[in-house]
Amino acid sequence: MKELAIIIISLFSLSLPVAAGQTFSNGDLKKYNLPTDTKSTKPQETFRDDKAPPVNKEDEKAKREEQDYWCRMGNEYRDKVAKAKKTYKDAETRLKKYSSIGYWARHKNAKKNYEWARERLEKAKNKLRALEDRAYRQSIPASWYRCQYD
Image (cartoon, rainbow, N blue to C red):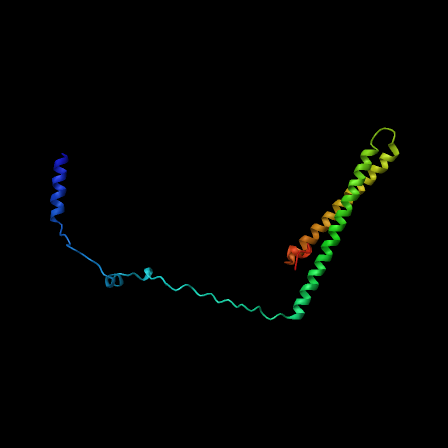
């Protein structure tokens, strides 16, 4: 059976015309070239202006003033948060100190002080978040209210 298949295939291959010695040249490449095959050999030129654009002194001054404003506001709210954290920690240690038996009156005052300090800390954090949100909505870079600009 295998032999029969081999004989049929060989007879079929003998009946096909054979192109003897086909060779191609560079002219044939140009002849059969497709429009999609063309690739530019030139690298794309990018034009870069090495000179900085002229600086408008008034714009630069206004930008600097705005950066200073956001820096001052950021510092103010960060200082409030830091001060509130310190007060909160002090109130917490005082509450722990007076939580033992025999200091009921002092414990009551320390507890009020602790709650007040906790509320103050939350308000300070909320104000800082509100400032960051306001800056974000006005497309102000975060580095401005963190004073990280040149």
